[in-house]
Image (cartoon, rainbow, N blue to C red):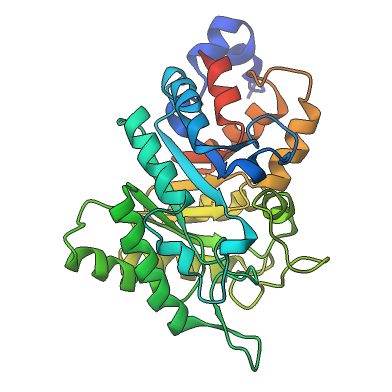
Length: 327
């Protein structure tokens, strides 16, 4: 038998275009957006495009770019001033807080763009943990935290959020929040669970950008985030979150967990979102610093690999740059 001539399918641009198996479009991308009041907005974020801190009055211009590029959704991350962060995370449900004002402005400026908000307490607590901390043991308390996450979720829907991304990693929160939303009549709110959020060192730039990291070595969140070594555990959490009512799930960090995406998609066709986190973005953007994020760039290659692994959408701080170069 003759050997196979696979190169015939790569021999010319028109052939490669016709038989390309995986495609990346602007509709696949979700732009991560940091919002801050004037003082913090004036300070540099990660120092790369897409990581700026936007004031509320700057969001209209940003949303014009988002709509023109064809990006369907933004993921909001409020950089709350340390003065409003407390043990009880009360700012998390403030109807006039930074997040609420940002949501209102985006809905006014771009009513057809989806708004995804982060459900966790870390951006609102003065210790930076995602939940309630036991003062005597230092443990993050699961059930007490879930009660506050339900309150936070209902508040975010009232603020105008379309999709809730549960990043806290507490047990049972998907079911509790889904039941609370249904009871309150919010039957169309999307619940998107961080089912595979590993305890990664790649979140460091994000924590600095949201202006909080309590310890020089970074907060130890291994008691609630999954070990990068435990793929089977991540799959079990993924299955449980869907059974509890999640409409979609998030894998984070993205490039480090392509194997988990593929395993999840093999189990069932629930929509899957890859989150290209700050450390991944910084590494890839450093390679592209002086180049547009076009096809064949390292950034494009990383995003297409997420699609190939099974991601339906990708959260990235580079969404705008990529989408504008795909046009």
